[in-house]
Amino acid sequence: MNADTATTPVVPITGEALAARAAAVREEVGKAFIGQEGVLDQILIALLAGGHVLIEGVPGLGKTLLVRALSRAIDCGFARVQFTPDLMPSDISGHAVWNPKTETFNIRRGPVFTNLLLADEINRAPAKTQSALLEAMQEMQVTIEGHSFQLTPPFLTLATQNPVEQEGTYPLPEAQLDRFLLKVLIGYPSRADEKRMVAAVSQGRASDFDLSQVARVLGPQDVVAMQLGTALTAVDDAVIDYAVRIVAATRDWAGIALGAGPRGSLALVRAARAQAVLSGRDFVTPDDVREIAKPALRHRIALAPELQIEGQEPDDVLHALLAKVEAPRK
Image (cartoon, rainbow, N blue to C red; front, side, top):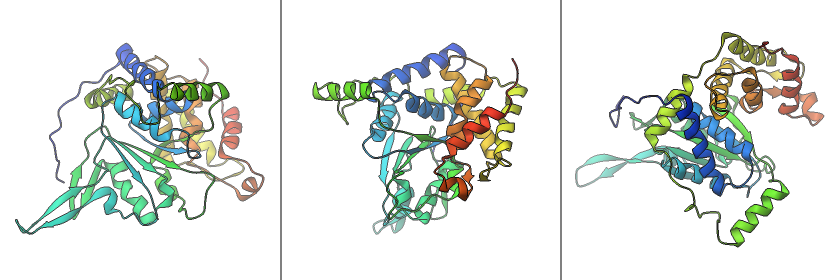
């Protein structure tokens, strides 16, 4: 395996400094991405936990704006790929180009070589193209013509999909869905938030692509240090056991045809650590686990056909499950 750049040791950021920097990023992104605080928090949780995100929502809700504002606040590279049926894997990862002068192949890197990759409407490309992201998401590397190239951390894939329009789409297989730390649902803003957004745009203080008001408060190395610090957030054995019991319950729960695997338990604990950081704590509580359980598990379970016919959603089943799994007593 060929590494492109030598890695230098990074000192983890912990404690109050970690919480303060996370709050600073949240404040700056919130200047451009008005409202939807829960969505923003979940994206920041994925960033702190070093995981990838699948964002589901109808077009026009500001998903691209959110990712671009985040990339500016943390001063990281940003690339956007519009997934289409004719998109090839090499359009994402890159390819080798013959150089007649040197009579050698030169590697032309694709958009995956960035920090924040927005995979827009990922379910519009065939499975072969979707799978081009798997190696990058799981192993932080890309293989081109038999040579492996390391991605520069931090690396975060934010994939979007439209839940309404299904014609001409290719549903993501379970193995790929499991690679996403969280599945974030983004809905319409409240009337008050939409009014604030319209007022800001009409008065020239913001627009879909005007990010000048978002200050750069971190750098790539700071983000990596924050991720290391988040991974050091204390989790009591009882809280870990609680997370594992929640995931295990999905495997035997009536109405769930396919439960979450061990990666679900890992994702739940990782996300709970980041949830604690956003809350200004250096330890995880059962409430952190419960609060992030739906985003961490909704894409890892498959409902039985009878529940789908009734119009139930994974969140409905997870809500009932969380109410039954006993939390550890303080």
